[in-house]
Picture (tube, rainbow, N blue to C red):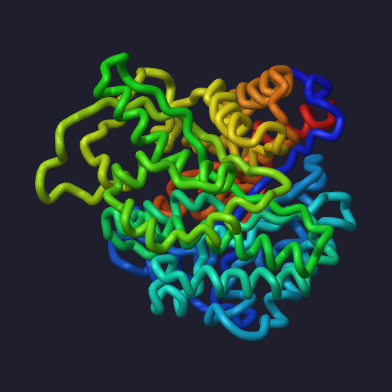
Length: 454
Ligand code: FCB
């Protein structure tokens, strides 16, 4: 597998997210986000940590830009923390927040790295959550307002925009299972959040296009390859449900302008959507985008099980609680996620069938493994290196299969605060010593650098 197996112009970048790396949560006039609040709740984060310090990237962005450019990355996908721009989620943009991202974008451009900005990677201003968060339609309007401010102030230095990161996680981990901020367990009503997030995307897209007609705008979904554990009707129905909730509930409104009826029916939300997801909303949600971002990590193999015992933990798959996720015996990462590179082609095909020719980018792919630092300070992460190599091969296969894949971003540039797992899971190709904040490229980073150099 060589760089030259990928077409000219194929973008190779790396990705991070604001709350996972920035730290400095009280600096520069930043307001609280739902993750600040959530992380402080006892038991919410496995190691009891918060993102207050994280990688201290807010104070080290110059060094981090130098690092990624020295490794040879051509693009950097980062996210803008909404509460740095509007501490309470409304009103005039905060100059200190704008300055931080302007300096970041400028230093990237100086080094020939193209900035790709995600507007929402999960850090909703807490003040908006207090008014209902994504369960409230109003939040979608606030999001468009924020997008317009950011486009106005930063659109001269940033051309590539991603509205949302993984609305499945925001809706169902945030409002159904409660594993993510804001930590609510509301069952099927969590699907209302999905609609408001998608509406927020549509409105933000409109705002960006109006302020910056030259902008390239897309959105990012986390898609899973989904397989039934057997050919039985019940297992195939389980796969239909999980594919429905994880993939089609987002892909279809965005790319075909309609929600999948079977999924609304599984959720028991047909009536709410009929009343609240208006034709006008769907027109906005399905307005043409310049590309679709796909975060691909793994495959789900599912079977029909029995209804969960009363009192069991709330599910991230409301209405489909009887579905069980089964192990195929294939190797897994430290997250327990099955390693299945071919699934990357499956999810691209699914998107391509709905919107033939729409440019696709893998906006995240990567793996957590247990890393060890040896006596010489080296991190020989052979498993992560293999994971990346096999997914680059899948990217090459996708291009050969004539799927419109235009680029790939590795998750993540450096170890960071992995949400509910805190600092206990490392996804970086660069190691971070959280005591000293020293950054050390792992073997996977050196492999990527050689790969990118060809
Ligand atoms: C994705 C998130 C990203 C990171 C990776 C491991 O779901 O977008 O922030 O947590 O998983």
